[in-house]
Amino acid sequence: MGISQEFQLSEPSKPLAGYLKNTAATFFGIDDFDHYRTLKAHVDQSLAQTLSEREHPTSGILPGELLKAFQPLDLDVPLNDFVAALEELKPLYLDHAILFHHQDYVAHLNCPILDVSLAAEHLASALNTAVETWDQSAGGTWIEQHLINWLAKRAGLPEDADGVFTSGGSQSNMMAMLLAREQAFARADSETPHQRLARYRVLCSEDSHFSIQQACMLLGMGKQAAIQVPCTDQRCMDVSALEATLAGMASNGEIPIAIVATAGTTDFGAIDPLVDIARLSRQYQCHFHVDAAYGGGLLLSKQQRQRLAGIEAADSVTLDFHKFAFQPVACSALLIRDTAMMAPLAHHADYLNPLEQALAGTPDLVNKSLQTTRRFDALKLWVTLRTLGPDALGEMIDTLVSKTARLGEWMVNQADIELLAAPSISTLVFRFHAPRHDDDTLDEVNRQIRSRLARSKRAMVAATRCQGRQYLKFTLLNPRSDVDQLAGLVADIVAMGHEVLQQMQSSR
Ligand SMILES: *Cc1c(COP(=O)(O)O)cnc(C)c1O
Picture 1 (cartoon, rainbow, N blue to C red):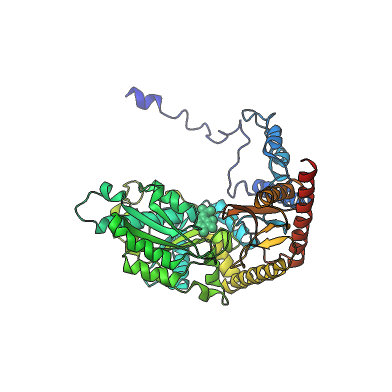
Picture 2: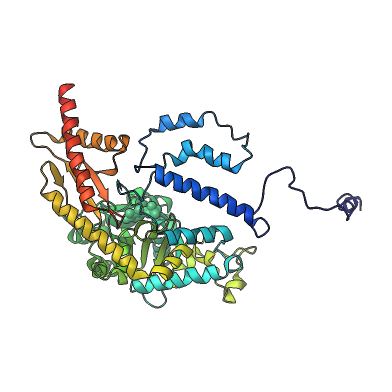
């Protein structure tokens, strides 16, 4: 009795409005729209300033140097002013952010982003749609589902294919391995799942992405469950080695549950022989997963599409639109051959997606995802496709492939440059290689070239190791890249290599 008294609101006449009077907080909405517009104008101005001031893809700053700028900050003491907060970001972030759209950024699989995609991302963030259930997203659910259906059709998967957007290729690969493990459990005999887990094996190539090993570890099979099949000289999975490995497994008590083909390896863009791997997957009753995080872009290209022949036999496919489709991070999907295969992902929580809701036909995407609250990442790809169309994306990918091929041909004829393999999609793995120097010296020189390029702001290039040796890598993802300009970068690399060699010799 006393409780209801205490909790009674004070005089009804006293207005509740004004409860934020001690803070400067406003919310996104029509009431404060002009305020929001002002904030947005400030952000756009800072972006324009950053883009016009910054001449290089990197500032070359080292972690310890940048950390000094954070020392005077006290997060307990606010600036009480948005413009001041933006100003403060300049030395902390804007002046040093790595610029992926810059011509001299040729390091990792980070693409320049289409402005229509960024604008659409903004829309999704503003409405703050969460796509996990129909009652939180409505049209967002159907947009994602339509895109999944369209992508599955592009990949040549059957009518009842399905899939879901994910946080990235690593999550897609993990989900694919999870579904493979669950299918294997379903086929298992009297052994306990725990006993079988230790015998499960996933076959992938030595050049496959590390997320496959990580998935095996997370799924209780252990990292060593990922068997790395050797690659041929073309850097593709060696089918005869795969066949021999599979044939020897039964006698060791090993059970192959999945074969992972990489369609576009991270370093070489190599495409594993999909048709042969599909055949062996069927023969050994394995889940056939295609990691097309990078190479999936070829699905959009008229010229290159046939290089993915065999992908239509996949049980699952990983696609990373933030790698090949000029989308902001994150934008990724996992496609699944048969919607029934996704059943193990469904969990019906009474407070979110009760079973009755699913039985009544409500399309709750959370039933197919490892995430609960999930961003509406499908929208930016949708708007990109509706504005520009898939052919435009495919042509941009063709441009990347042909520019990379041209640069590769040019590099083959350069003195003091060793190109490790002919390009497959849009990467070039090479090293500075002056005659009469041993491999250990060359390793050191190439390592130094990379850090000097970054430190001097000249360019961001990647590094990788192959057959125990240090290499440099270009990843071309900007369709506007100029081949001559990149050839100029290669020339600078050669000059820098000689400079490093000289310094090493004189300090000896
Ligand atoms: C980048 C990459 C991944 C991982 O994708 P994220 O989106 O970075 O999680 C998986 N496989 C391949 C072949 C990749 O290149």
